[in-house]
Length: 236
Image 1 (cartoon, rainbow, N blue to C red):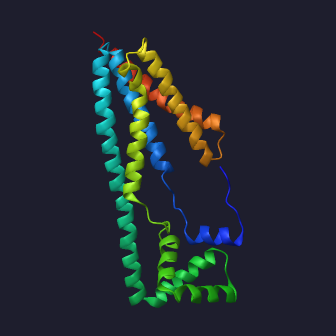
Image 2: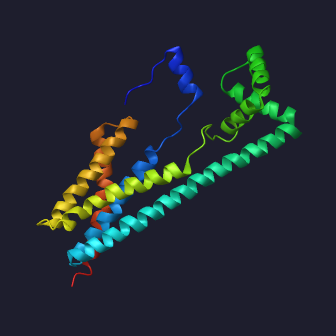
Image 3: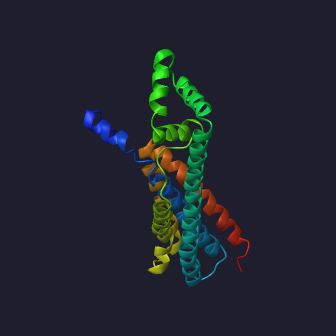
């Protein structure tokens, strides 16, 4: 992944408008779950020896219903995080109004733990507490450990649903198009999706792309194997 620049203009723009965590977690979460759950259904139904029509029907139902459910859950969870940050900001505003000296001591302690001391610490404390917004922002980060960039519930939900829908349709394609040996083709295509998601995820981690890909492939493969094994128990 390309690293950011350090010219004065680049630094000013990046620090002045931090991007937050983005949608990487939502895309990876939705993509892996979409491919895992859909292929688990395919594997379970195929293991039970049922018809391709049943596989397609149950698979489509899973992609749409479970994808929407995941998106709704992610929206609600992200919104809960956002509501919690807003609540804490109100709490800090109230505390600053009622207990300014106590809140000032908290700012001083946060800055001291970041390595400031002596006159520099006192000047930094004065500068931060002179601006109410900066004061509250520092408390949200330093006292509660929460980021300064608010999450976007709808963006998170849409990213999750889109990734779930895209990855979840892959295991169904061989059955939709009536491909010979549809289950085998579906298994290989799904394995490729697992590996691709893991390899893509490595762009934002320190792990080699092949290790990240194999890790995700192992997780998805284990889920599929369990579902197929359960399905064979009900084979007519």
